[in-house]
Image 1 (cartoon, chains in turn yellow, purple, green, orange):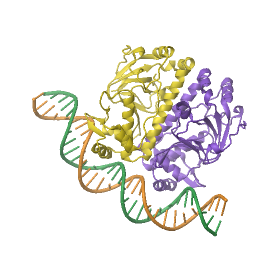
Image 2 (cartoon, chains in turn purple, green, blue, yellow):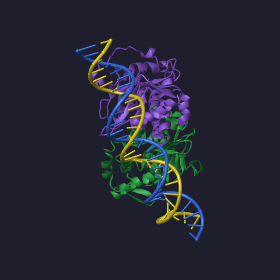
Image 3 (spheres, chains in turn purple, green, brown, yellow):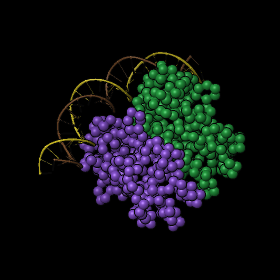
Image 4 (tube, chains in turn purple, cyan, red, yellow):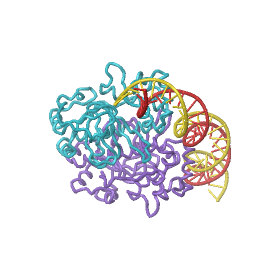
Amino acid sequence: MTAQSIPTDMARQVPCEKCPLRPLPAFRPFDKAELAFVSSFKRGELAVDKGATLLSEGSNSAHLFTVLAGWGFRYKLLEDGRRQILNYVLPGDMIGLQGTLMGEMQHSVEALSPMLLCMFERDRLMDLYRDYPGLAYDITWIAAREERMLDENLLSVGRRSALERAAYLLAFIASRAHKVGMDGKGDVEIPITQQHLADTLGLSVVHTNKTIRKLMDRKLVQWRDGGCKVLDIEGLMALANWSGLDEGVRPLL
Amino acid sequence: MTAQSIPTDMARQVPCEKCPLRPLPAFRPFDKAELAFVSSFKRGELAVDKGATLLSEGSNSAHLFTVLAGWGFRYKLLEDGRRQILNYVLPGDMIGLQGTLMGEMQHSVEALSPMLLCMFERDRLMDLYRDYPGLAYDITWIAAREERMLDENLLSVGRRSALERAAYLLAFIASRAHKVGMDGKGDVEIPITQQHLADTLGLSVVHTNKTIRKLMDRKLVQWRDGGCKVLDIEGLMALANWSGLDEGVRPLL
DNA sequence: CGGTTGCTTGAATATATTCAAAGTTAGTGG
DNA sequence: CCACTAACTTTGAATATATTCAAGCAACCG
């Protein structure tokens, strides 16, 4: 099922003034003028099911979104079907920026769970740059943040062992999820299959399975309900020799 | 030798009005006001030797540069010394943006050849965002372009075979070099060692050597003078199943 | 000329893939 | 509620790919 087949809900179920994400300590406070502009910049909301393709490689009609709720992932395909997952998408993340700025999308985005997204008007991006230089700066910051995450991922896929790589990835995702309150009282549960993990790590499913098993034996993670429950982020970080996210507060559009 | 040990040359050997890169068809034309601002934004030039570290992971005093001439690369290290090269840096490319925006550098940049760089004033970046929204947009565009290149690289390291990966990488670098006129009348010559290649591809030097040998047997590349001469970009592209750069014109700050 | 750096090669070992099959789980429809 | 299906996980064995180790060679530099 693609995003196109789902009717866009124009109703403001979540007005910007009552954004559930903005109050989180992970995000920088916005002043009234900024909030008002963001609110006017927002065109509507999009709700999609698990498995929906939000954006697809080769398409030109890219929209700009911010994730309000749910999980997704960004990926590219080779012609014969091999898939590389580039990064995961969590609440507070912006998607479609590359396509909005540069024209044709060169990656796709798919929902891992039901998702709710704020949709922004591509054409008004120029207004934002003209009238709100602070927000323009924020958007560049967001692009630089994505670049930073990709740098880490590339380091991991290129140079870490399979076990380190898996540990790093799960710690990375769980840390990000934790920052946006996706762990209730308990541990973070990531709604992915081992195939997703394999396609992120650059490994086969079989080898990924054997690698995860080692993490399970060490009681670092648990596999259940078609997802991965992260039991010990610090243990994973130690195993991967990864020192954790270092972001401070970030902007939220 | 680090950049710090080389005296910064404040003289304007290359005034913006006589920029050798800007007239290239790869770059979008700037109007007078934009050119004037960029010229005032430029603080000086930096010339470094091959092997110099321009920016280093963990440092905070990041500068913002645009490469005028020469080759470099961006990389990250693991604690035990394993290195991943993230991308190469060519004339027209901006470096240090991540550090300028986000504070601490999380990667390093090293010169592969003597380099000449334009140095920009970090503090004036806000002025740029306030007074030149078009240029602000360009900077975001540049960040999105880097992200796109990283997406491709990650796809390659994660999912292409060693041979495809090497072919892709060399075609990619040679295409970029070609766009900025780094091939005289002949072929592009990339000033890298097989160790650099290995650290980019996520392979050992030994295996990299055996892989490159296959490319040489097919007369796609040649190794000489401590560098790689690309003989047949299209052959490499076909081998890697890569359709080439798709950028159009880009901004040059 | 001696030392260093980078390239090359073969052999032994380790890591990861492919193939094949079986077990599990969740969902669907009768 | 159960049978059936599809998607996902798990396992072992055979094979392929890549690393490590070790050694030698070539080019360059002081």
